[in-house]
Length: 293
Image 1 (spheres, one colour):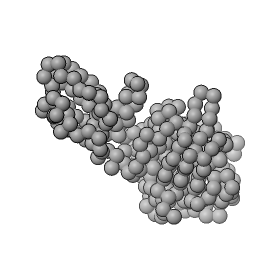
Image 2 (cartoon, rainbow, N blue to C red; image 1 turned 90 degrees about the vertical axis):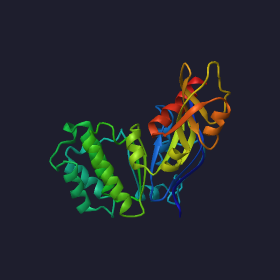
Image 3 (cartoon, one colour; image 1 turned 180 degrees about the vertical axis):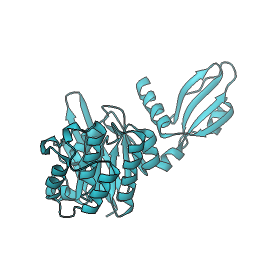
Image 4 (cartoon, rainbow, N blue to C red; image 1 turned 120 degrees about the vertical axis):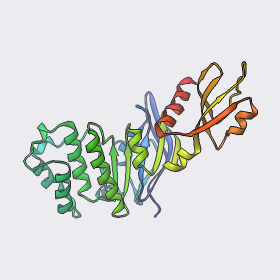
């Protein structure tokens, strides 16, 4: 099996929003970053993968398991961490751990203890008094200590400081590196996703607009700066997004699969310079283009 998660033709309809039709592929052993603006459908997609809600069309397969027909097997091999998880009912961290571990025969006590130390959590800590970031760490601990084959994380970095983010991403990298494990993570922290995710998918208004290896996607795009003589204008072209113009100085995003510097020069651009694009710059440019349409 080459892919951990395969989504084909997925549709979920709401009165004012529709997710899909969505085709999405998460390779096995990858850290896959699912990004997009608020309301793009990231949480909806993740919830549907883990059986929270019912899709109107399409198919979801996780580790060869149908997300409906094989729900028990899927949930024994995959773990989910989302912003709405709440463990206060168990009172203290130790009680929450003892309750959850009873459901999973592959629970790793040694790894759990290591995570407790790394995340600065203790058995006697009361869940109700934990900070938002500490509650997030507890959710991650309860998921990671199960040693799941697939880990689905919806905005797990919310409320974490820079040091805690490094700790969490370090544990995720270790989890993937130790075996054939896969992480699907949504986050608004695009610089974090760029550093740690080897694959990305970009959602916009319920549609997947980009998907692939992070390095290949970032190699595909360039920021171009160039000058023109007075009165020069550029025809619209697929793969060219003009970001700003200041008199005769231009700045644009180029999709090098469609438009290159030679095309710019053939239409009057001079002194063309190209620089690598960051994931955040790419994200902002693509969504500004959508808002302008």
